[in-house]
Image (cartoon, rainbow, N blue to C red; front, side, top):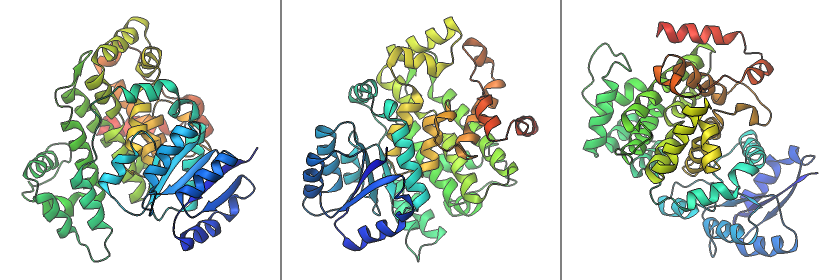
Length: 397
């Protein structure tokens, strides 16, 4: 049966562009294009849809308000925001009512992958357990204003790395943390960098954005401590996974975008653990005990205790930040890559492998069920023999 997809945007030219862009999907999707939120709700009252994709900025009823109504009236509908604006206040309105935030322009493959992923994860992303879990949380990671300013500046055609560096330099605390990390053994520089201009020029804009996101997210949960988890230990693990992911992406000759997406996903893949530990320390600690006593992979213990895993939470929440689709997929599915529809070698593959390889060299992994490589998934991609190469690169690094 075809999926029914409803696109909502107040600009007729945008709707026409979407129609042209998605013409090749007519055999798989039944699509309708409407120019306002009220019309969309009226149409859905007549005939529900599987997925609604709404523009964020619309007069009368904006995209966040529309999807909030869709959530109330049609809770089983997958809800996506598509916008060219990084508006912090509007994006925050989307929390809880939106499954994924996508930035314009969005190419057909990215949009198709998002719809397929959101639809395939219906049971997880729309489960009552996950909704209840998120609804009970009072401390959720906020979208860094600094990050949004960087994205806005980077999207301007006349922007430069110096402009981005000046934005970062306005935040002395973030500047100090970035320079401390960049000058650490993690990056292995031959000389010490003393300014944000040098840091941005040396490690690149995308890596800087990843560090701003990660440092901000982790700093909000500096005192989270449950079941032996500390911010310091998780930060160190995340740095290691990001580094291994970057190496694997480079070994597999990924382009700059793939390398940066793998690094970003590696840095943020376990942010759901901090969110759970900060909001539900007793249940998080119970998950740790269950994993240790029964030799379970930790995410499986979380699902038994909480009904959802840290990967579910991280993917759901960070998807609202407008991160690239491959990054969100890698965060949400890094323990279950086989759930990815139309599997292909991607940042998900890389982060899944990097996470397991880092755990292999960690004594703590013996205390509970060690994360396992999905052999069938890797075999389907023809990547089984590459694992030995990735493991050797890790040992060398």
